[in-house]
Image (cartoon, rainbow, N blue to C red; front, side, top):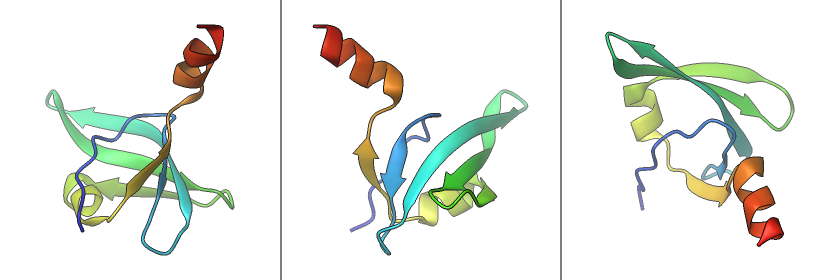
Amino acid sequence: MLLQHKPVPGYWYTNIAGQLIQVRAVLYGSGERCRIMLEYINGKRECVNMAGWSAMDLVLHSPGREHRNRARDL
């Protein structure tokens, strides 16, 4: 099933092959998201356009560190 997630810098996602992928940055052009910088757990980086992001079958693996820290402090 294809789930649509907004790319959130710092968040980890798992693809259909089970690889962990982190959104490192979201790049904007003309005020709109145009490219997403991804980093795999092995350190490989890849930049995909919005169509490429939409075609990836990703599941949210865990929220970013900031969210975990807030949850821990509660």
